[in-house]
Amino acid sequence: MDTALANPPHSTDGGVKVFRGKEELRSALSEARRAGPRIGLVPTMGYLHEGHLSLLRAARAECDVVVMSLFVNPSQFGPGEDLDRYPRDEERDLRLAGEAGVDFVYAPTVEEVYPEGFSTHVEVDGALTEVLDGDPARRGPGHFRGVATVVAKLFNVVQPDVAYFGQKDAQQVAVIRRMARDLDFPVRIEALPTVREADGLALSSRNAYLDPRSRERATAISRALRVAEAATRAGSLGAGIDAARAELSAAGIEPEYLEARDAENLSPAAELNGRPVLIAVAARVGSARLIDNVLIEPRT
Ligand code: AMP
Image (cartoon, rainbow, N blue to C red; front, side, top):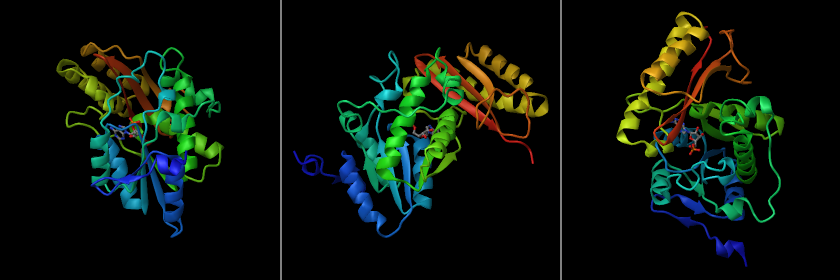
């Protein structure tokens, strides 16, 4: 069957063009590329919120053509994780993408991304992928193997000049930056600040899992990171971690991890040493597993 006919791109009311097939997207992009424009890519798993929209707006402001991918990537979910219940609302996502000025949405099927017999993966070294979320006792390194593989595939299909990611997923940013550098992808990786609710909670599609009581308790995570930063600047990283632990504990939250690490190579950080340091936390609150972090830049 001719896939060009099987998967014709269609336009939504917002003017965004939706592609299910990589070949159709590729040919639309090669057409657009003739004028020599700058292409921006925003990878997402959908269920868009203001965090995603901040990336789309940045891409819109800086690029001539904005591509958003919309794909809940099964290979980055472990067994027993929330793949089946991950929130989805494609219609709303397409409307919001159109309003944010996205030109093309790539919303492939699982079979389009992982055809029968798929057997090639991208693996970034364990120093970046077996710590924090990648620790085998947590999500495990398979999570980042899934992320790196799907992002490499998106880079190959879209060939963006700039790709936009959220600092909310700081480890993901470190992994993608390393992959792009090591595999010579000619793309600039932009990491944008975490967008938060008024009470500090980092926006996440998984916040949809929070019942009202858990939603309230979850505010302790961003509070803990704020006190950690203040106590670190006033004293030491150790004091910062202790202060954060106390804040979480007061809300009855036992973190999966709460660690200070070099923001680039993710090696453990004992003290501020002139390099950006990440204090990262993961915790289960109610039925949601939430992550958040604060980036402590050296004072100039
Ligand atoms: P996701 O759909 O959760 O895979 O996220 C898609 C992109 O949006 C990733 O680069 C995330 O880091 C980014 N993102 C998610 N939440 C936020 C947030 N609260 N602020 C900024 N970026 C975010």
